[in-house]
Length: 108
Image (cartoon, rainbow, N blue to C red; front, top):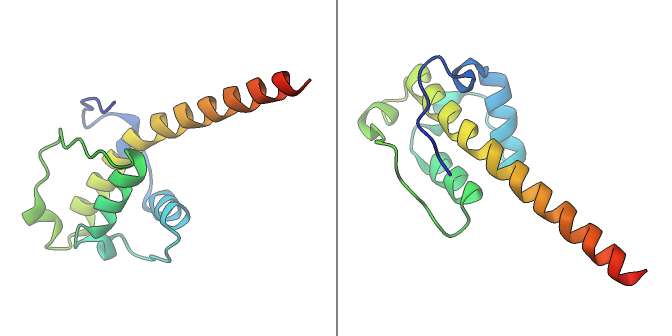
C-alpha cells in the first residue's frame, strides 16, 4: 500500500541511472533520459505493473509539470513510483516463494 513519504525519504536519493534501469527492465524498454517519461505513459505502465488491474491514485500528480519534460520533476515522480513499487515486488516474491515451498512439500 502506498504511504506518504517526505522529501528526505531514501526514495529521493535513488539516481537517474537506477531509475532508468528499473524502468527499462520492468517494462522492456530502452529509455536513456528521464525526460522520455514526460508523456505520463511510462508512469501509467509502472502503476499498472505495481498494482495490476487496480490503480489507486492517492498521490496528487502535477501532470502539467511532468508534461513540460523537466528532468527533475519527472525524476522525483519516478522515484516516488519506485519507492511504492519496491515493497509490492518484495511481497509478491515472498508470496511466490511460499507457494513454491508449499507445492514442493505437497509433492514429497
